[in-house]
Length: 279
Length: 244
Image 1 (cartoon, each protein chain N blue to C red):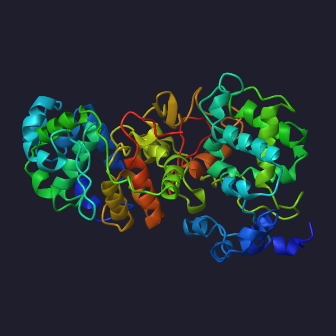
Image 2 (cartoon, helix red, strand yellow; image 1 turned 180 degrees about the horizontal axis):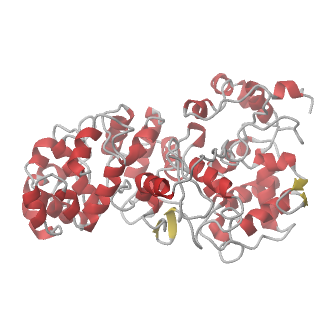
Image 3 (tube, helix red, strand yellow; image 1 turned 45 degrees about the horizontal axis):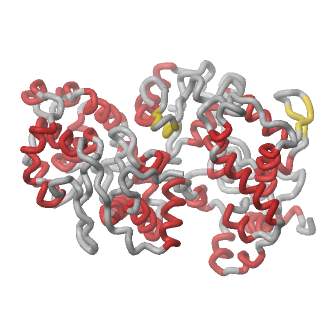
């Protein structure tokens, strides 16, 4: 990587870095250049934090970029397969997935979206020590963890075609980002809300009924059409399992507040012990 | 807090006036309207309100057919005000729109006088009448280019997160066929109508959606985006899955 880390910290460079591999032709285009000068401006306008000066800002390539990319056609096929699995993980139902969710249910924007646990950071920060299981994990083990803890599932085997496809998709999204960056990553994970001093079940219930019931129903069972969720259940077998709910309630709350579909509202979950309302 | 009170207040603002009452309201329309109307609309008729009856609805709908057609297909009118397809639309959704036209919460010069002619029972009946019709084909997407339709399909099924536009299907359901009484079917709806409504939300002229769900997204859509989804959904023939 011959681009200095300092320049990586700047928003504008983050994009050009992301575009550096095989996509320079596009970057030369005036309109794209214009767009590249303010990545995630839409998010900032919506109230998300703007990138800080020392943060690594990376705009992952899209699937349209993949078509243009100068990489082996066989690799493109594998990355496409990873994208398909990521956005329609239900095709692995009964084999690797036993709830109603897709990877992209939580990792919004096909895994590219800041503040919605974008997945490219995993590709540049792993292998690393993980507190949850107390040893050094690589990318495949991290993906396996998602299957086990969030999909109520059984992970695809290490080295299998499905695992290869998923890890290739992660890595493709990280195209141009530095390995083991020493800067904080803009938009990584979910922004967890501060815990209010006083917790109130009544407030949580009121917020849920005010804001959430329209989609998730009074009892949190969600809404399904032909067996496919439109609005996922907020709890129970069809939803995320203990890995995301009981173990890290703050993550779950942060997730719900971010994945909230209309983007500018906060969710509040009251069904799970440890949840606290945002009021 | 009743429907009418909320309706009057809600029209003035986008964010703050249409939360609880809205949600509760739609549930109550589904479950029988009793509590809803008890809140002060017209207590006399509220107590007598029966579930919507399609046969009575047909009689009450004679004035609707001039625009919405006998089969409920509506009509796409390029350059003019398109009349939406009502056939197969959710009864709770239709009833809410009629109440909103009546109260001014949804403003439309054409619909206001007609909605005002219907009492609460007739609204329930007319809604039931149209809801049990078969979905009809839509127009307005015939001339769309492949590129426009590809963009429409993207927005409909996957959204565009770079602009924070969630997919239409994440609320309107797989294939855009509608979800419950709050999220109407948009597949096989006329392009002219979809486009006009999205522009109305974008421009702040329509705001009777629950919790500003549609308004927030419409404001992030470009004119091209609106043209794209309108054409794409108009091309989704009834019975076909528009989803992936």
